[in-house]
Length: 299
Image (cartoon, rainbow, N blue to C red; front, side, top):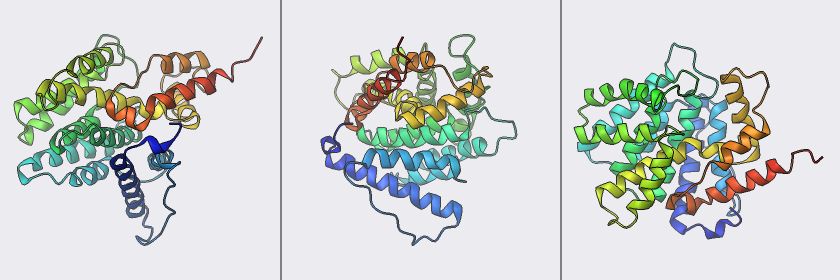
């Protein structure tokens, strides 16, 4: 984003509050005094400050379950929606306590990042608290059982995550409609087969009333797909770090993905949601493409 003054005031408030919440969560996890002060982010660095705090979670002992509960409690849901928090917490605990060696990239750290991104995008898309909560829970469960490889068939890994996640939702009395929205959000994260459909559905739904269920669901699906890849497109340093992890996960002979692979991914991405536009995410992606292209040796 060229100038954070383009952010709406409510967007600035959301970012500041969420960034502070991450800092408080870090303090609780690390045992640091709760009164420890950090300088407030300047207007210019607001989005970067949020990204830095999320990135720092990789080096902390913050748990997905704690993050999910912390975020959902901020939504002030009614007691009739306590099942959303309970299911999100349980899914987070499964991610945190997995006894199987997790992939280098698609692990609890990635899940924590997607949960954070889904929350802020849901807020900026002006979804209701209940629908934001659903996206956050879907973010927590979107890579359940991920084997650390790409799909051999369409929706293969997404179907596995649904098979693992849906029984948990049912055990906490999620309605059939809530479980179906969870399923559709997870299926949308198939980068080859689901994401293009989610983008088309979102754009097509813009002619519907803002509270039309089809429009809201289309926003939920797109937001989760954007949250899933947000930090891979956030900055050169973040992209470098995540690309190395993905190379290791795929057992590639090189320490990092090639520039061609990284640019191929970035050029296949576009951030379409209104929330992403408020945060300037596509500007960031394009700036990252330009920066990587500048490193290509000139013959």
